[in-house]
Image 1 (cartoon, one colour):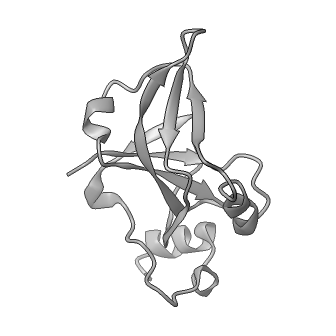
Image 2 (cartoon, helix red, strand yellow):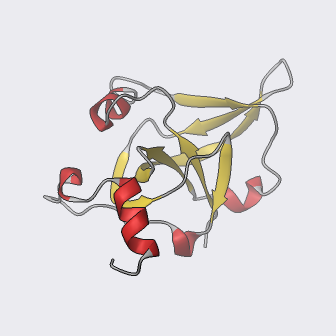
Length: 130
């Protein structure tokens, strides 16, 4: 089972705004200061995007490459695959996400607008209502 990571879609105003980041791109890279210690476990994994306190999409991880300045690039497939939104608290940087905790991909015809906002879903989940 591959290991995944999560990251906040910082400055994305909406889900459509997040999707627009991937349009007409041949490559997608994120910069991070340090190489993840568990990077070898991420072969076949994805970066899951957090927007409005929910995991809303994923981008497959292609690999990691060191930059000339010593930082690292996280190389992603330039695609955003919508997933069934799951509540996720905000955090700085990235965090690991085990495969068994990763949300499933949305099926054809499923609409991301048909689910509760992340904060509300998180509160209802803590109360045992969903």
